[in-house]
Length: 354
Image (cartoon, rainbow, N blue to C red; front, side, top):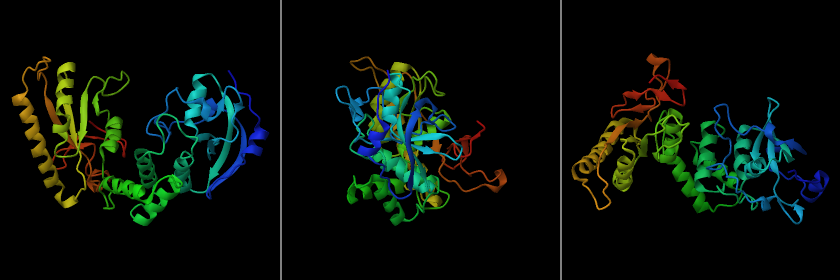
């Protein structure tokens, strides 16, 4: 199956119109399998929370009666310095086309003035009315990941609130109110503290770290190709997180006959007090674990507590360089209450010595 389209009509009906910092090179035919859609580690470059599935609505681009809808947003690719083209916007169409054996379609080829401009465009180009696939981009979670990615790449002064708000306004392209942007900024600040050498984390970002370290998170891992296949794990950050998830934990533990692994996060880290912060959280969590061990009995559904809920350690958050260890962060991977390394795996340093 191939789609018939007219490049000249597309240029006439929908001429290129990009924001400052995004230079349009040309509109051209693109062999889709040649596009770069994952990074060097095989992780998707799609800015959405998840890659859209193959039920993507083809009506976004064309319909069966009238053919191509030329007024709709174009697929956008970046002309990189290495000569490759990276897909920036249009992942929904890419996956829909791939499922149906369509290997060529028109794209706009662009170049970005700075890395900052690219990070803005990766979000803003996907905020239009035509982006309606499953996994809608313009969610708080995706925007939060976008500003975090831009900050981690040092593309702007993320310690300055005004700079952060400017990035959010540009990248959301008027689709979010100031109140909504302020809420996103506050969530960003919780996970990306301006305090030097401290890594702020949320459950979402901790899950990303767990994935890279091969640790279970978000329940039972049934993916055969996963390093944590057959294990149960959760990342927790609030004092009552175990109580909230306790029923699910016990049911998984019973059904799968596998221990539940818990990994902790400290919100709003105060470096000089982090040991006390961790002790306070662990005391509360251990109370919940002990209660579960002593009180879970056979229920009417015949579930009973076969295995164990085990706290395995805290995610590393103090990132002060250790001169006695080659300048690597003082805390890496998973640590105990005192910051001593338990599992020496750290995605940021590609340091794996467990």
